[in-house]
Image (cartoon, rainbow, N blue to C red):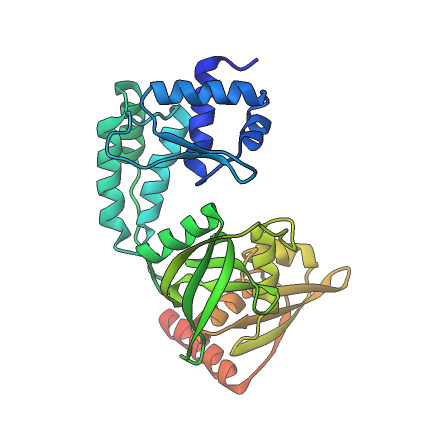
Length: 322
């Protein structure tokens, strides 16, 4: 059976992970009775944690924010994970995140016990984040607003800038935020269109959590990453190419990033076709170059514009060798 201190730490972690929990949900997660949950909530209050509760069918527990919260409680793995996350955040895909992550890491080290502070300092001292900006950056406030709306199950409103530059108002039920290949995506259900949608976070304008709660729907995929992978592969793109490669489909799949906009279809035991799509000439050129690195025979069927881009890239490479 879980010890009381460990259970209290787990309960506190659950309360911090979501805006509100019902007593039944907490009891199920902790594998205890509802009476034990109520007693543990009272113990947290005695320790100084401001846990509010409401009664009735819609009742539940909520950890209120405040200035006088007790010291931060993290175990070894959590402390190292937070430090690594802050250092990784300095990759440059979020506007201004480099300085913000360093300040947050410094504050984290100040409030941790000496033993954990040493472990966090070791991680930060041995890690050198390399800033890589290969795409649009996301405003930190936009990311925070979208993530909080996912966590709290609040309808999110925003203006979405489409590829043609036109902005369109949207109100959605956010599910998850997924980061991939230097871009951030919001997975959400759009009630007006009665369907799931994927939104680039850098194209969101004036996002606002409306305060209107919703019951989460079942995602039509095993995970948010799986849904995003399917959405990216099926989306229309400005530049497309079909590659016929003399290599097994599984070999080609392993060579490509799993979330790049591509679809690999076997045409034989040792042959396959790869459908590529991108809105950027340079990005789709890099995808084709990645296939060329397989060192197998392949042909490319694409537009004249992309052909010229590929030829120019190849000529620059040959000129560099001369």
